[in-house]
Amino acid sequence: MSYSIDMNNIDYDNITFSYSDISDGGNYGICLREENKVFDQIFLPTFYSLLFIAGMLGNGLVILVMLTNKLKMQSTDVFIVHLALADMLLVSTLPFWAAQTTLGWIFGEPLCKIVASLFKINFYAGTFLLACISIDRYLSIVYAVQIYKKNKKTHVHWSCLGVWLLCVIFCIPDALYYSVSFESRTNVSTCDPYYPEGHAKSWKITTTILFQIFVFLLPLIFMLFCYSHIIITLLRSQGFKKQRAMRLIIAVVVAFFLCWTPYNIVAFLDMLTMLEIINDCTVTSNIDFALSITSCICYLHCCLNPILYAFIGAKFKNNLLELFSKTRLCPRFVAKHVKRRQTSSKSFTWSSSGDTTMSGIYQ
Image 1 (tube, rainbow, N blue to C red):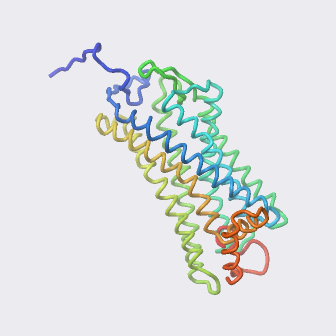
Image 2 (tube, one colour):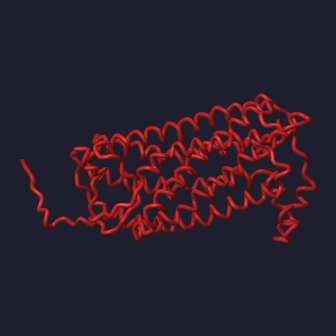
Image 3 (cartoon, helix red, strand yellow):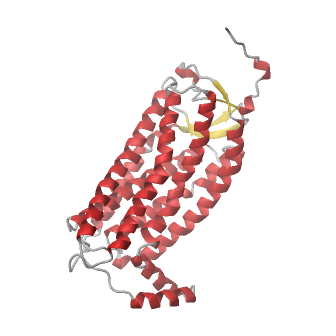
């Protein structure tokens, strides 16, 4: 049985070719995606705007509080500052992507490459810095090893610089291949990656696999290994508030897993559509819809980081109270918590010196 398509009656505004690089010679199906398009135009701008506000305020406050106490900053605190900076720079690109969903890309070719590169650099940096924090805490708590002496803070800064350089290297393909293209089907311009002709599908599959390995699986393995050993060490220890530290550790791992796992599962299914293992239009449309939702959950992690790594920690709360008291902001909040802090006991330290304490996020 054969079928024919009346090309004069196709609504091209609501059609997408699944990974439609025709130069690859793939036999791609034509799938309608009107509902997905409408959803993106309504939901994404609103959600991105909320993330932008929350991310800028939360991470900006973390940086402000940390830098006002920079003389007391330890290795984990330095990592947290870089993490907050990465998250803040990432959410700063969201208004551009929100505008693209409704107006198309109206900011020109150079800004397309800059925004795409800035987004990817900070997307990678946030994950790698989380892994650095887990390794730093693992060594200082489980083995009581001081990698970054208080009088040698340049070491941790060099470590952060190494992370940023690695992220820049990872985003080179984005800087090269992201460009603005006019889509005749939708009558708007878009800022998307356009890989070399004849190799687009292989490029997309390779970048997806590398992303899942280096930006999700390896950091997750590092975090699970480090924090599981930290929990075991805390359970064996005596004399300090284990419950608060363990609760924070579990929250860190659970938040990372819940925010990142759905997206990586959908991205894997999306890769199967590139390989034409999945070629059903209904399934492809559902995957496209799921990518929009799960990517938003990933970005939500940028707003959770200030809560998980700073606001739960007693050390950050104390520094925040000091900042409020100096600026005379929220006097009732300060008075209430200062009284509570004065009656609380001091945190247990692993040793009498250095960074081998339950400092930073674990206080």
